[in-house]
Length: 273
Image (tube, rainbow, N blue to C red; front, side, top):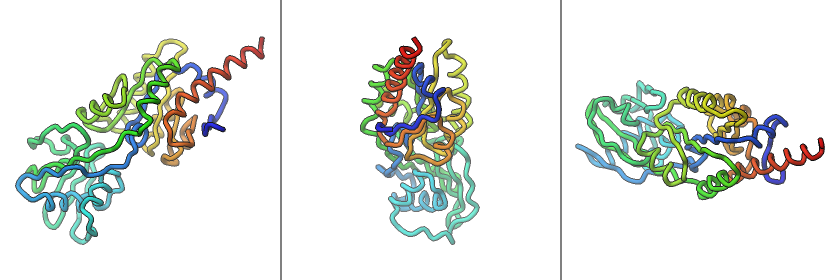
């Protein structure tokens, strides 16, 4: 408790002492989850018009990327100009904005439109079926992420994995900066569950796997891992589903929890003897 670590049972403490693999959700766990618009690249219209279309189409969403687009636009959204909003899970949104059909999301949402593959988080925009440009958005990596990954290796964790709904280029860039061993991109919430199930089935005998996340969509993955760990600053559903909760935002609580679990195991064994 002095370290701000809540472990919900002795069985989870035991599992922590045998961790071989730690799987992370990216956004809000390895990164701050606070997005800011960096660049606007318009095609066939001005930058301000492109940003307006994107902000209006995302006017009803509370997704961090949608919030960043509205903040960059900086003006009040008049919802009277927005109708027929449709969200496609893991891809983006399509809406009727001032009489124009506007889609904002990743390259999958753009379908057969010719749009570039950009490293980093990118919101592509189409208007009336034509590609209109893209907006790059940055999500800052937590300053202690690289150090925490190094500490995990020193604590005996053999493999670290990152799961994300981001596109391949963005995921590869983030994984390289942080020092993740493996990453899997373009995953919907159900895909993350399947990926963790696959990693669990590949574990060697006696080894355990932990999943660390903080979002409401992470709850099923947290429940399915040997140890589900949630950041205390995350969604209530994630905290409820987790076996371990890190009450402080610092990622170094993860290797600390492993070290504490292993020390506890040694002390318990000595007491039995």
